Figure 1 (spheres, protein in one colour):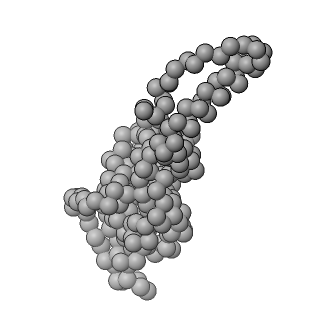
Figure 2 (spheres, rainbow, N blue to C red; figure 1 turned 135 degrees about the vertical axis):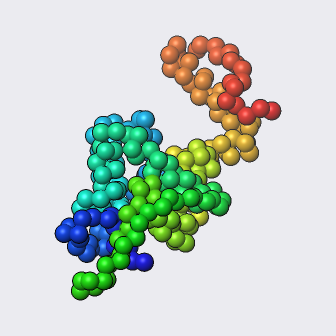
Length: 222
Ligand SMILES: [Zn+2]
């Protein structure tokens, strides 16, 4: 089924017009899907939240009235309306990130085929969650799977490059530093001592006697 047919809402007959394919690049669509999957609905600020609802609308290519459009309208004032759909996105993306398998039961919807016009069009009436499930599952192809991972350090799900192990530079650098400390515990302690001594001398002058303050809990154990 072509993208434009997948989640078209059932709409009153007079409002039925073939919609153009989704106005999103694959990259944009994937970015949105991963954002839905990682968003914390309880922490999103009101303005950001409305943008999120708009993104869901764009992601699903919702046009005209219908079941999904109604749910998204309600979601603008009630975050609970979006929660189930966000949970579906999270489930899909995390399953991919962790290279697991998962199953989702979709509920009964309605499919309407209309061949009375110039070209046959298929319409679907499904819930918001099922819409996310269908479009999301379709977007998570092989190429997408290679780019979705879970950060080995902070465990956050991310969209990156093929083979990427960390969500970003911060976690990658922190991991490099940790491995270095693990490999060179003595050097790390000497470095910490020098740093501490320098700090004390800067404060109290070069002749101050610097005591060894002992190992800190963050130091690698001996
Ligand atoms: Zn990370």
